[in-house]
Length: 314
Image 1 (cartoon, rainbow, N blue to C red):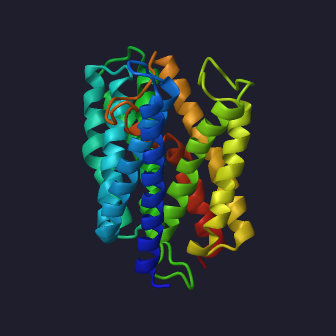
Image 2: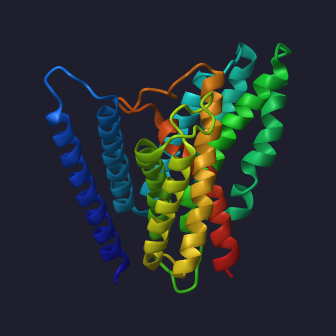
């Protein structure tokens, strides 16, 4: 099938599922007695609404080609970094380092992806940025909680920019027999990992009894994790035909990125709890900020990129 037709078919199917889910959510809301609210139904509808925004933005970016995808994820990185920095402790001496993050390293990282410069893209942040940022902060001559402040800025840049930028970086891979289809790798990654979040929520509500770590994420249960990861792994296996993988390879990769996606959300939840927060922001009405939506992708994207690059790129 033509790559464009494949993407149209995929997005049509996803939008059809979202339309069905929206109808079910509206029906469940309508069945509630007048004046009564249900946290579960409200949360479900908020998740469906967030999915509409995510898939709609992704479809629009795909229409713009590689540049559209790079611009979308650069925007996601900018908003994620802004949310991360806004809840961490910084001082005036850190402002120069933050300017480097937002207005030099972030755009440079995505420009390197645009021109396919893997050699520098892969080390720009974990080498050059990690060395320059504490130097810049130290020039401010403020030693108060210096190590903690430097680590927070570096960690925010790593999660929000370096890790997330590996999604559009998938477009730079030259896979034999897969020319002009790399957008489908992004679809595979996003649908597999994001569906894991949904299925974990559903299985947790249906069967969840044993809390994993209530002090970090009160709603996550062992049953939800197992059911969600296995179900979304099946989704990944079913999507093998849009990838260069065999069905069993798609299942193994889906299992790996789903587990990493879970721990991405888990780690960022721990950071939120440390800061006394429920959500990273309020960008998506009723469902948190940008980081709340891409926390799982931030951990899974780099591993997915390097798995594909190592095994499928000559």
